[in-house]
Length: 283
Image (cartoon, rainbow, N blue to C red; front, side, top):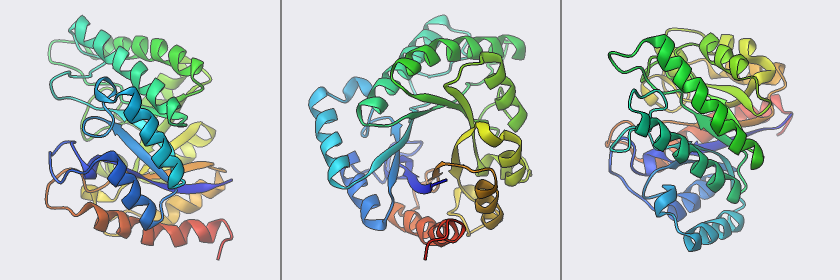
């Protein structure tokens, strides 16, 4: 069992605020300096939106990742905005565009050595039944998972209760995973969404068990862990108990402009690293 820390790129650029904004290369350098072993890359400009990430930039970014010894812990799609990127949209062209976006993200993730892509199951648009929205999302996941398998990538379904209305709870993610029934489709969750639902994060860990493939760490209000209401001592201990082998990826500080990304990244690292080291017997 090896647990490692990574950081999501959102607070360094583009989602949902425009500023502050740094290049992906600069972000890799800063996170490496703090001590992170992994980076979770949002597939949006200016970092890694596939249509604007040229072959030359992909090769250069790969060299930079290798130079700093930084692994791609995972990637996730750029959501909303002009393209929509809603797999449950009532607009067929938007669903198709989103599926192709996911495939492009999978390909780029694999090129950089990553093996995990987050699947956000979309959101129900007024006038569409939940049953139909769920069916469209499952259909999309089935298709994307086939491409992901070709690249050796695992898709992880995330319940996003704060932002969406299809996969809202732990059991929704498990049910979708079981319905798709593919070996490279697993589950993940974000402690922020569990806290938003006033649920206990460790319940998600024990419930998902061996199917928990990835985890987002965030305190309430997208604060760094240890700065709010979350019990991250119990989270780390529960992850050890189920034999979790993967990244704890910080997804924090990105929902407003008045955040210094280096500061929240350092806060999270300095709080969680000793907890992770302690359960893994490191001094």
